[in-house]
Amino acid sequence: QVQLVESGGGLVQAGGSLRLSCAVSGRSFSSLTIGWFRQAPGNEREFVTAIRWSDSFPTYADSVKGRFTISRDNSKNTVYLQMNNLKAEDTALYYCAAASFLGSKLYTDSKYQYWGPGTQVTVSS
Image (tube, rainbow, N blue to C red; front, side, top):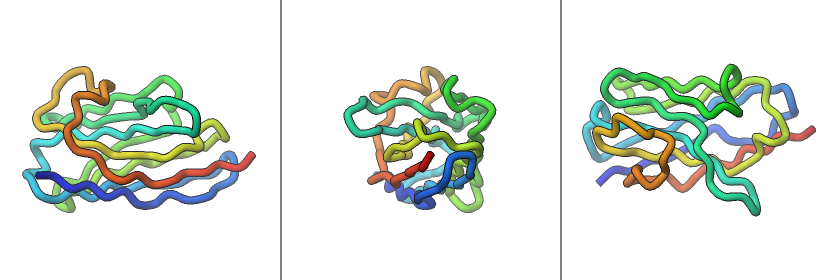
């Protein structure tokens, strides 16, 4: 079993930055691909970014490319999401998710077996 806990959400003005953290426990962290997804009220959950277990290769949604950066610290069992130049449309509940040995289609939420409770990000315009 894998447990994930997000932190770092909050209220920020447009153009500002936040760093989210996803702390992972319960299983070999190095074998897990970690993804970030978000869901705004009235919208479906959407892929944001993910980092592959095997080589830490990142994948980003087009809407966040150049603004968001995902990274992982295997020594701390933690994945980070640095979000810069935030926009009002980034407002959502952000979830991290984990999948064992996932190497492709990292943007598909059904491939992730474990999910955190989420952290709210609100960007005021």
